[in-house]
Length: 204
Image (cartoon, rainbow, N blue to C red; front, side):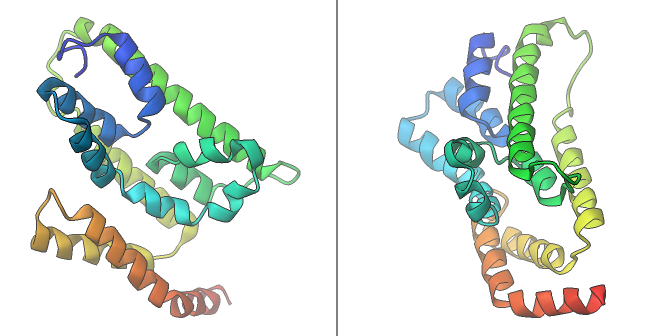
C-alpha cells in the first residue's frame, strides 16, 4: 500500500517502529495520501486502536514491576502479543517477565521486517493480491479459537459478541468499536464475581 502510494521503505520502517498497530498503519496510508490534519490523525488513531487500552488493564500490575521495560511493554501490546502473553504457560525456572519482554520484542521485530520487505518486494509480485487483507480477519479468528482453547472462558466471549453486534446495529461499522468495548468491560466488571464463581465450580 505504501509503495503504491509513492512512499519508500523508510516510511514502512519508521511507521512500523512507532505506529505498532496493523489497522493503524493501514489507515495511515490513507491519511498520508489525503493529507489529513494532525488532529484528525490523532482522533482516528485513538478510535481505531482504542481496544488496546482495554487489553492493558489486565497487565498494569505485571508491567509496572518490570522497571525500565514498562514503557515498551505498554507500547508493544498488540492483539497477537496480548493473546500470547495471556495464555502462555512458562516452563518451570523461566523468568516470566523476561520471557514476556522477548516475546513482545520479537513480535515487534517481525512486524517491522515484514512491513519493510512488503515495500521492497511488493512490486515484484506478479499476481493480483485483491482480497489479501482478509488474512487479518482470519488471523483474529485463529487467535480467538486459540484463546478459547487455552483459557476455556466462554462468558466474556459471548458478552463481547453480543455487545459488538448490538452496537454495530445501533452505531454502524465506523463507530461501534469503542462503545462496544466500554459496554463489554462494564458488564464484565459487574459480573466479575459471578463469572469467577462459575469458573471455580467448573474447575471442581
